[in-house]
Image 1 (cartoon, rainbow, N blue to C red):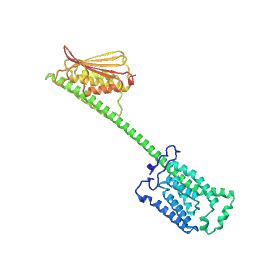
Image 2 (tube, rainbow, N blue to C red; image 1 turned 60 degrees about the horizontal axis):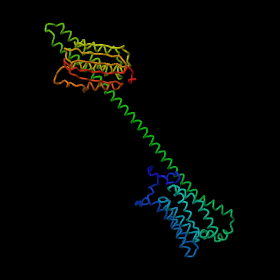
Image 3 (cartoon, one colour; image 1 turned 120 degrees about the vertical axis):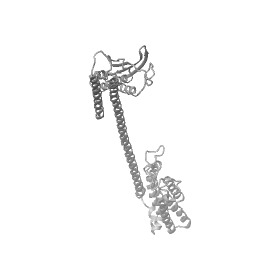
Image 4 (cartoon, rainbow, N blue to C red; image 1 turned 90 degrees about the vertical axis):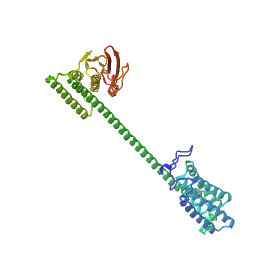
Length: 438
């Protein structure tokens, strides 16, 4: 029922309208069972009022007026929960006619206390304030009626008609006391209704706060889960790239060594054994590297000497490598050293896979404002080789290099151009010497 809390009337004080129990205050509802408690209360008040009117010592015309007051009071009680504003208006209409026509007060009118409770408990903000103002006004109105008409039917019902004359002789002090008593009679249930109203408001606010806290906690959990998923995916992508680079490079070296064995003299057993030993060494190295990649949860820090180790490994496989280092080498942060190592590894792998065996692989390391790695070779002519061109090419290896370089602020340039000796493939990578390219 917390969702049934209503907003205050426009321009009125910020008094929350709590949910109505047992059903929301909808004047157009067709579920008459929801009205059962209200109809029952109205019936009880009507019965008591009619009994009071029937037993009063008054003339028939006055008895009809008392019946009108009894029925009006009963109707107001019946509307006090579902339509508190209408109930308050009906009370004022009955009291106004009672004062205008000079109708005596009735004992059943004490049931108006239920209307005071209902307006404070379930009324709108405007109804609450109007009912608060109505309480002292009603108390003074009772004092005026008593002063002008006496206790009337109340005294007659009690069988003490001498009170009629005694009331007229009461002092002003008694009248003030009557006003206070009237305010207490109506004010006490009104305050109880207001307290219950604010109790509902506090529960609604607490429930809203708990819901907001739960939403915030859920958002934090979802954010943490999203970060964890992103981290795992990033780790998975890094692992896939590392395995691709290690396995691809090792297989390319092993393939080159195996192909070189085809050109050995059949009688040169020692050269053949040396080649097979190199293949075995490359396979063991590849297996060790793959195990290291799979075992490490963080990127392994590679020393700068690893770049030259890659170049020496290609030479050992039987390929001619022409290397040059320009400028003064600088130590790189671990994450940049890994990127430089993997990028050069992939460049050399591509050079071995697609290059001609009778042409050297040119490797240049330029240490200027940033590390520039350039690998150049003549590619073999085959139906599977990419068509020559002047712009960057695609492929999983090239895409992996680009992603690695861009992650640290570097870049990659790949060019193919036709020359007299064949199609030259040149890959150039720029690696910042500081993290983030600073």
